[in-house]
Length: 93
Image 1 (cartoon, rainbow, N blue to C red):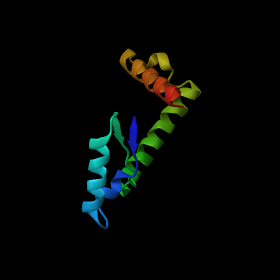
Image 2: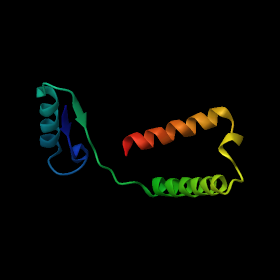
Image 3: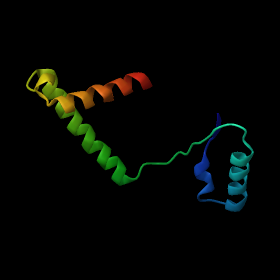
Image 4: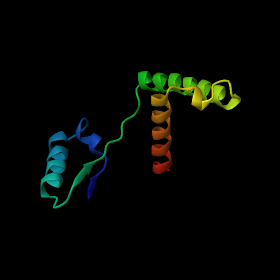
């Protein structure tokens, strides 16, 4: 596996042609799978959306911790999605 880091620099900046050519050559000359990695800053809208979801999740967790909304009271499909999400988080950690 070949990782190309900071590919976002090929989008804007100085000497774009040279940077894009370098990126293209790295991809085409690789004898393995290529994973292109970029880093982007979150927009104010993204940050606001994340804050909103964080508040909603905190409310849900508080309700479930207190026992007001037990896990088994949720519909089975939602229970399964929650378990899958938690398994993904555990796997990534």
